[in-house]
Length: 266
Image (cartoon, rainbow, N blue to C red; front, side, top):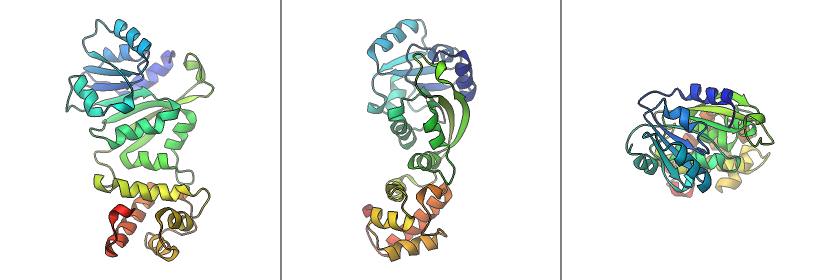
């Protein structure tokens, strides 16, 4: 990013405080890193490109509160990054410009692993932002996943010209206020996501057919579970709210346990 307006938007959304620890993804040449370092206690700047990491080290050589980590963000953990920054066990915020092809993977990486950030401000392609922020009628696996852990909010759209070289599409800054606890217990997350993936696995299929095929359950059982959850079997996955997915999961979980079938089969 090379836009001062874009920089201002990100910093205001992040609400940096003097005692904050911030993990920055894709620090590049330090356009965000340097001003951020003047506002917070510690910046742990992650950059996968070796040449950019070298430039960043030179630019930040006089800053004792900036730690440069060269490597793939998906091949480390939040806990390991905090340890490298000398901030093990401390709360942190997350900021970064996420590459389109791994946006979902990075979000899952930080939302599903501990410790989770208290707040995340991410710049993503406009299309991805719309998927994250989608409401019932246009929901996706990504929007359900994010809402399980956070309250998403659109901060601002950013034109392609704010970047160099400019991408072919516009971007958006999205703020994620991380929930104190996920909406379901951690041990139930694999089962819940198996349910949601099954629902979205059949494009343009009704929930009756998608869940029957995705979960390997008889149609009659799927219809019964949906009715108990107050959801029409004729609806499609993209029309369900996060609350309806949670209700459906509760009914499915109770049904499977009642029948003494293995929870791990989901």
